[in-house]
Length: 310
Ligand code: GDP
Image 1 (cartoon, helix red, strand yellow):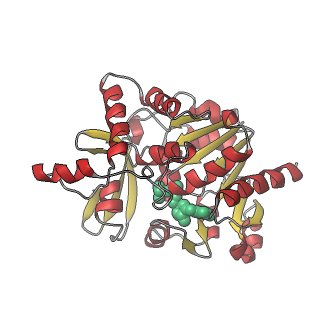
Image 2 (cartoon, rainbow, N blue to C red):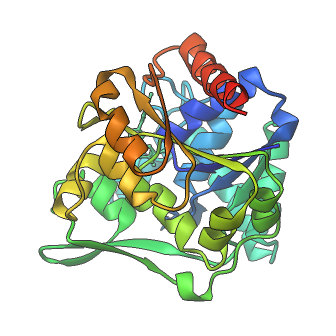
C-alpha cells in the first residue's frame, strides 16, 4: 500500500506517475485542505481538486490546475454584481465547487464529500482530506495576516512571508482513514510539494506527525527544490524569508525525523553526502516531471531503489 501526502501541482504530477506504475487501488492520497477557500459562497479545495483532475486525466496541462478547455463566463459575469475577479474559477470547476458545497451544507463530512468526488471522476485510488474540520493557512507578511489564496493568487506571492500559521488546526482531527493510511502503508511518500504550506498543514494536524514518525512504512520525500530553485510556486521565496536554506538539503532538514529516504535531482548530486549525513538514504535521479513517461519513470525508479535497498 502506498500513501502520499500531497499538495497541489507537484504532488499531482508525482501521483500521475505513481498511478501509471502501481495499481491505483493501492494508493491513498492525504490531501492538504489548508488552502481551501470560500469564493462566491462556495467551498473550493484547490489542492484536492488539482489532484482529482490530474488523476482523472482532466487537468489543464498548461496551468497544472483547473480543467482542460474550461471557460470563465461565470466569474466574468459575477463582476457585474461587484465580485472581484482575482480567483480564477472556471465554469466546469464551479460545478465541482457547487456540488461540494451542497454536500457540506447537507452535513456530509469532508472525507465522504471527497470520496464522492473521486468516485464521480472514476478514480480507483482513495483520496482523503487531511481533516474534516476547517484548517486555514494564514500568511503573515509585513502588513499583517492574509489568507493563503489572497497571498498566492490575489497578491501573486509578492509579499515577504514572515510566518505561517494554520488557523483552526487545534480543533482538527485527522480525517477517518488518515492515521490508518500512515500506519498501514508499506511506503509513505511526501510528494514534491511546498514543505511549508502544502505538507506543513497536514503534519500540523494532531497525531499525523506522530503517525509518520512511528509508522513501519518506508518514508520517502521527493525534493520540490532543484538546484536551489522551485519548479513553480513560492516555496523558495517562502523558505528564504522564513530562514530555511533554499536547497534540497533545506527541505531534508525540514523533514528531519520524519523520513528515511530523500530523493534529489541529478543537478543536486553534490548534496548527497550532506543528505546522508542527516542519517537518510539519498536517491539521486532526474526529478523534473516534464512528460507522462518521466512521471512514471520517477515513480518506477524510486520503487526500484527501495526494492534494491531491502
Ligand atoms: P501547489 O499547491 O500547486 O503550489 O503545489 P505543491 O505544493 O504540490 O507543489 C509546489 C512545489 O512542487 C513547488 O515547490 C515546485 O518546485 C514543485 N514541483 C512542481 N513540479 C515539479 C517537478 O516536476 N519535479 C519536482 N521535483 N518538483 C516539482
